Image (cartoon, rainbow, N blue to C red; front, side):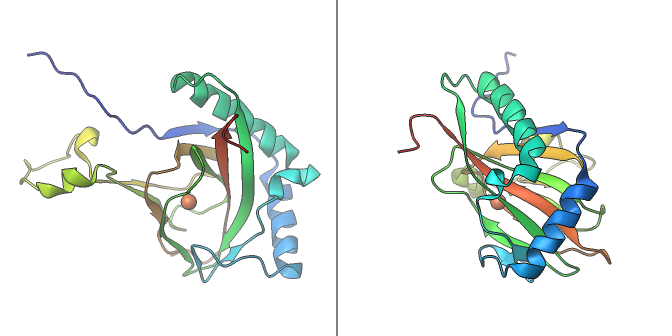
Length: 194
Ligand SMILES: [Fe+2]
């Protein structure tokens, strides 16, 4: 038979080499002098959202643009990306992020600066709400990825993940004994930033 898969949801990932130690020190110092914002963070610190304008983080911004441009190619978009905002997150042991989407953006993502494997997976949910209507029983063993209703990804230091801004996600509690530091961001296609 012919099999075609329509309406895929693509989550992009890329590993980059940056000075994470420098970024970590800078973010920890920043958190000591700034109370930050209360958003989806539970028991964690969320910085203000103009981090992309801070010169020390320019190498990260450059990598984000490089990857977002690749994503635009993949997604067949014809105008360049605009980086709307960017912020740092520190989740101490027990800290997590409640389920959310990123309104008024096209693509969102995260970059891991300091993250032990058990410091909290990012969890994405099946976005086609109607697909939750049927829950047939499945064969034993590993289910193929395209049938998953949830995707759990381990944080990996130096990894950027970019996904559609409308995709529901959360971050599980940090079960390690150390802080987890990540950076989140939102991109928009040029022309929508008015
Ligand atoms: Fe998010």
